[in-house]
Length: 176
Image (cartoon, rainbow, N blue to C red):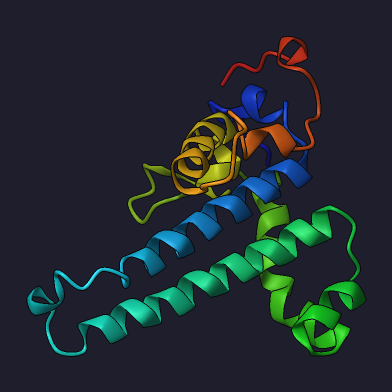
């Protein structure tokens, strides 16, 4: 069953590879922001004992999500399991087994964009936010990169490098 979403026409401008890259960009920004929270020491007295360990542990969780997003991106751009495996130091079969559920979820979200919440009334998007609403993600990530990456002089440092499916003026109209 394929349902439409309010962002289908906008999303049609992007290839799946570009959407996967946006998700990876968003995950990487989350990791960087999480790590930045551990740098300043001024608020250490306000943090309970063990609190910084909690923050560091959260970085591991964020990095794991970024890794899964990187694998999805690499698969979308045509990388084989063997090519991905060489960077993880495990066999291609182990990589495929480890990330198969992530890749299946990614693929399924394009066919079934929503699931109902526990009440059965609210639709929950299945694509990550950056892929579900790529125009918003491009604006947010371009701003994030311009504000934090010192040697970046591009006005659109994230969105300018994405592989687009079609120009904005050729986007087909979709009514939800």
